[in-house]
Structure formats: C-alpha cells, structure tokens
Length: 182
Image 1 (cartoon, rainbow, N blue to C red):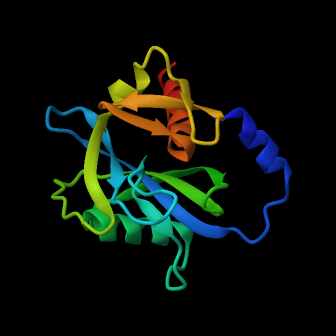
Image 2: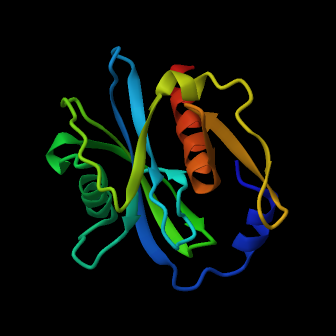
C-alpha cells in the first residue's frame, strides 16, 4: 500500500523523528461481528487535519512505553479506559514523512461493552469498520491523486477514503488475519 515515492523518502536518513503510537482496537459490533475503530480527525492547522486514521498520537514524556501512549490516546480521544483493552501484539512501526512521526502500531481487543466519549477537539467522528469488510475488499486499492501529483493507494471503508499510513497499517492487519485464516 505504500506509494512509489515513499521508497525514495525512506532511503534518506530519518533524523530525530517525533514518536507516536496508534491502536487498532477490535471489539464486538452491534450484530456480533468483530469490528475496529477508525476516526476522522477534527479540522486544525496540521497536516493530518480531517484525515481518517487510528486513534493515537504523540508519545508524551509521562508515557513509559509506546503501548502506554497508545492507551492514553485511546482514552483521551474516545473515552475508552485502558482497563477495557488487552494488547494482542505490536506490528511494524512506520515513518510518516509529512509530519515526521515514527509510529508504533498496536493491535488490541476489548470484550467490555464500550461507551464512547469523544473529544471534539481531536475527533470529528468515529468510523466503525467490520473486519469482514476489510478482509473482503476485492480491489484492496486504487490510485488517487495527491496534491503534489504523486499517486497513492487507497482503501474505501465504510464509505470513507483511507490512505497513507493508515492504509499501510490496514494492509498489514489484513495480511496477518489472512495468514491466520489460511
């Protein structure tokens, strides 16, 4: 799912990136299906304004580990208590050139009944996606033109365009799930 220009960017050395953590939280959906949350970020002056992504954000000095940061961000953005989630595993970290973030990505689940409490300063909306929808996408990506003229792969999930780091993370999640199922 990485755009062609990404390889060129990564061949350059990455010096002093900011550290962040995101979480893909699996939960039991309304009809009993396994689902996960994506969020649409609120509008703000930054590069990720109004984009669809996973709950998460910058690692603070108070966070002992990236996992602690991911749980804190989930709490701050969606109101999901760290006591309600269990880590499954960490997946491949990812560098995001536009914001200069090095992102640790975690898979987790919750068996608790979740009541969301969104922070409107950070989250415009929550997008619930069933795992079946992700797995069953026939054409996992198409081309989309970016502002700078480069093409980048995208997913369309629950009528939302998902691209960039989030699409790359979803491609890895899909690959992991398919390996388990086969």
